[in-house]
Length: 416
Image (cartoon, rainbow, N blue to C red; front, side, top):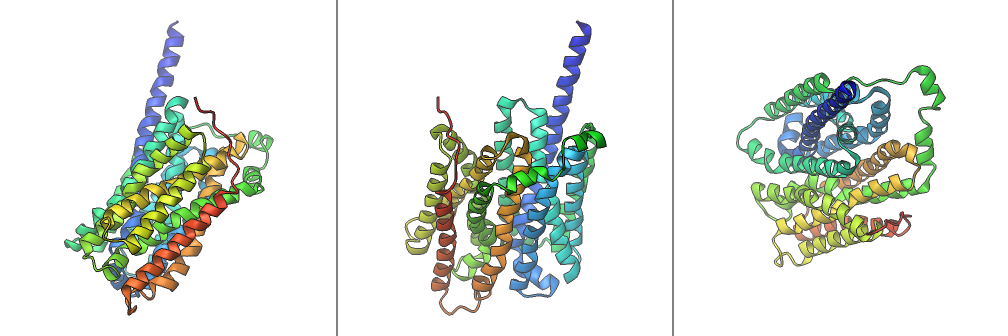
């Protein structure tokens, strides 16, 4: 009896340690989202700091998504092979290094720094999910993952709403990026020290389980995996490409808002994610349909943008962007679908695959958006027409996601 009680106590204690590690990884997720979104509120300052144009600065900022998408494939495998103690700690360290290097006024190191930020950040969400699965019971896991998403989105909001006034209030760029780097380093050490050591598969056991690339072979041979990634990528693009890079500048130049107003309006989109991600996920479970909720989220995004473009007096811009953010929470639903349309044994790799495709779409659309709309932002003779053309481009992306959604195969969910 004593041995059984001791074993139960040890197991319970280990779960608590994993929950503490999960909390630390949540802070990592918060910081990486703030790092991802904050350049949008300091584009002119950073362009001057690196001695390049605003368009050139947007290209540098966009390199984040190149390494984020590719490293997403590595993150899932690293967690399976090495465990969170090493994989997530290395991810945080890479993010920290990227932030520290971003404080150096050099074009080459700037590009390398931003790519390191993307590579390190790719470990955040998979790491949170991995640690949550170790610390929480299955009936609490969905709640933990939903809370993870919310905190990340709050980081995105803080990266615009809080950082903008700090920069324009006198905080120098180097101090911000050095501070983000130091905080990341502290989280790295804390996570490494607290996270339990996990048993790594022996070479013989790993060989018996087959080629380590086999899970990705299964996922990428399924056409539904690509459709899920495309839908998610096209729905994320209006936020990752427009709001998180160009949003503040567009609302300043094309709509005449001052900096503080533009920063607040842009920050409402990730705030909308905080509401939309868990709400739409819950709604898809309640209705027993994923596709219906994705189409509803797309519709809300399009209606919000059309109102902003053609009936701006109907609702203030910050509410329009909040509703668009809520609708864009539908971009997370394909993350559930891709797990449901692939075998159980590759669900982890499916998450890495959809991250790769989703942010691959962002990597492609970023330069297109910068060339077509960002380059003409300050030279346009008709700012109203320029803003409307930009909005219609975003609406076209959302409409394309709606069309692709019709071809998704979803597993019908039993509703009580």
